[in-house]
Amino acid sequence: MELFLNGVKLKTDLKDGIYKIYNKDNMFIGTGEIKSKGLKRDVIM
Image (cartoon, rainbow, N blue to C red):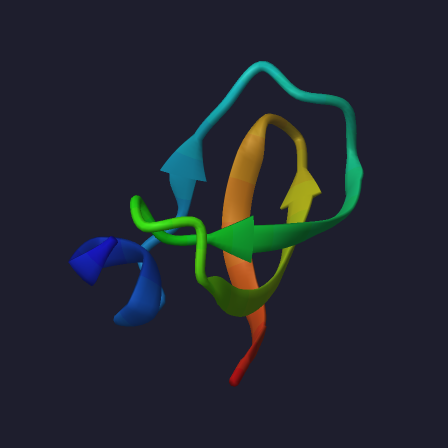
């Protein structure tokens, strides 16, 4: 989570698109965008 919040692009196998991001306690964090198998934060609440 710390890497994601600091803007580090994380590898994933999900399809490209905009996703809602939740923490381990199922609390909404914000949105992220997947492009070319990399998840990058978009909007953080």
